[in-house]
Image (cartoon, rainbow, N blue to C red):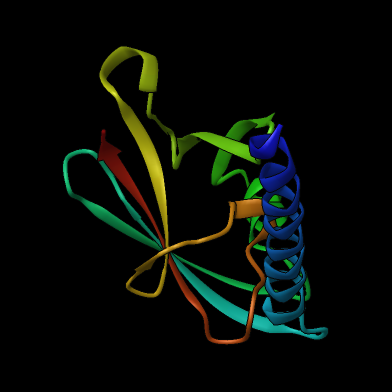
Length: 131
């Protein structure tokens, strides 16, 4: 019986900490900026060749811009858009562990493509990656 009485306060404390961390995450994430923005997207193919695409947009998130242009194709999944094809090249994870990695600047993106907030002058990369 003593184990149960110690477990309940521990679970409550864990829940409170998780709620605080979630609130902190929501409060600290960038909010979309309105207005015209200029961005650059670099595609690195499986053969290491690169193509650069420039966009002028008033969109707030990256995914819709690239989907509308036809640069990326994919399917909706539990975490948003799962990119399957970029610039005509398919990455098939089931076949060889390949996927399209999204980078913001030089850093691996911490958000999915359809929740990545666009800021004027941002530079993104979509890199064919073997898992």
